[in-house]
Length: 484
Image (cartoon, rainbow, N blue to C red; front, side):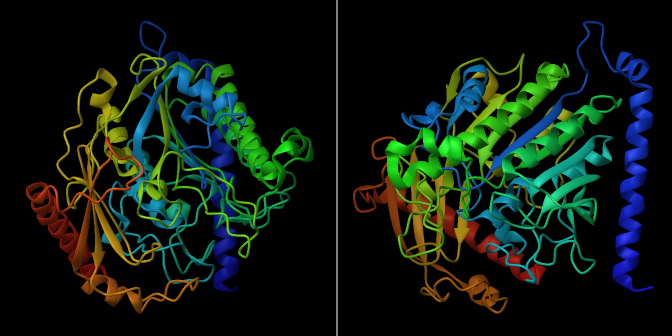
């Protein structure tokens, strides 16, 4: 029997065993749930639900100022929890951003440099500790639903898969698909056929798993990754009709509303299962919105980064600052807002802190525990927020945020990557040898659109941040060289 057949068979048995375990847990749910509650009837350990959407812009939600797109469920989540105004993705591109979220580490430290095409050699290395692997060791049930996009060789023994990174249950697709009747979904290693709109397919699977997880005497970590509103955009005709007056933008607006409805169904299921009060929920996007280009791609991306400058693939705020909402009843206050600078690399240390466990100590963790903001305090940040990307519009750049200030730096290697070409593994050497050259300084409170470079006006601030960004850039590239 071939290796591939053996692999499928072994994954099938693993999936069957997991389903049997869940069924057994369901039979004993009443006794188990009684044993997991404290004297006041609330769970003693928090559950975690992370909802990640794809290419949603900072200005695409009603709760972030959009007056056109109807997003009542996400807006309700914001009214129930804490809306974060200065939350960042760890990259302006999907694969490295997802890697940063899961590991708490800047993705260039371990070589996830760009989006990952099918059959590519790029992948999240097996030695990286993810939120799922960390929590699974502590007895958490772990699941991922939707877009994976952290390897080129999906559902293959040649590269790590979601279960190799700690997800005991996975219903995943490698990368973005057309939203109607998407292809390529795999459940625990077994390819499955899907029909309907991707948002509802992912939400339905997440709800089914939640129902099973609610019967287990363990806390859970659930990572829900929607495909919307990434191209190719397809939306229910009824919703498109609701936005007909907006012309070519109608299908994008409908897509965001359809996404909102799917998210609403998950949040409602959480409530119906009695899990809402015991679950930490984080909603966010993987990067800024895709830029509309009439002559490129599928021509339906009309996301807004307002009032920020730039889009996906930009190292300006519009490419990396994203909407984010945290709801954790009893810990976050309803309807409040925080302007503390935060990033998705903060998610791992935050969840570890809540779970009462340590983040990995054998490597640099770039993120910090964000729980102090729940009581109005500042985050104690050992490593400043920083970003590195080899292929933004404008050429390779690194960025540093400290307080109200953002420093951007161009690399000295030029714009070496061919336009629209996939990442070439040989380009890693150029990335790793890069040095920082020219710098731009912005005050984001006074100039949120980054129109005024203040480098000449604040030389002391420039020198201080320049020294720190050079140090971080060299540290990241040095670790990246060691990983090769």
